[in-house]
Length: 209
Ligand code: 0O2
Image (cartoon, rainbow, N blue to C red; front, top):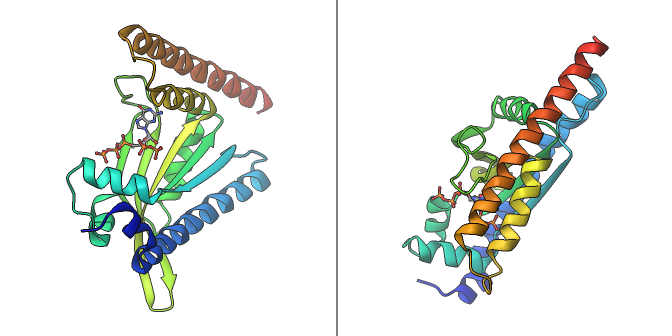
């Protein structure tokens, strides 16, 4: 087994990370193609922004250790699904499902798992649609499937999750019941806002015909 620094500096680890970044590029391109088509054909953008990140060696190491998995390259491949991560920020909840569906339908993509924290939010109020995918990348020695996690959120859901994430990591402040409760209330307001904005858009679409 390796330590975090050994992991980071090892050539095979760097190769694995290169493969994960390639998978991010593939997914990003697919989403951008859908966006381009939509804005051309329907004069609408299904998403506002895409962010991507490769999990750091430190946080890969930490997650394997925390979950009791071996610290090996095979174990990373097998046990972690969020080494390659993308976040797609949409305007409206409807856009999330429309875009996710179109994306999953592509015949080279395999949906491994879907976690719908919009239909079933986490207890703290977290909302987002997570897709775990197997995505092919094409290397000199052939095709290889890589796991990628894509998180779909509305602007409002992302606003909440970003701030909640920041607050969680301020460990000098205790997460009192009151803070937890206030965050939940904010999450509910945000859900209500998402629905209101969606309704307004539907009305405008209807009146446009
Ligand atoms: P970072 O910094 O985003 O990389 P599991 O594999 O199901 O046992 P896991 O991997 O925790 O458990 O799955 P989960 O909870 O479905 O998805 C994890 C990721 O979703 C997190 O990544 C966050 O990005 C996001 N997420 C999940 N729950 C919350 C939450 O309560 N608040 C916020 N702000 N984000 C959340 P990481 O690895 O935690 O962090």
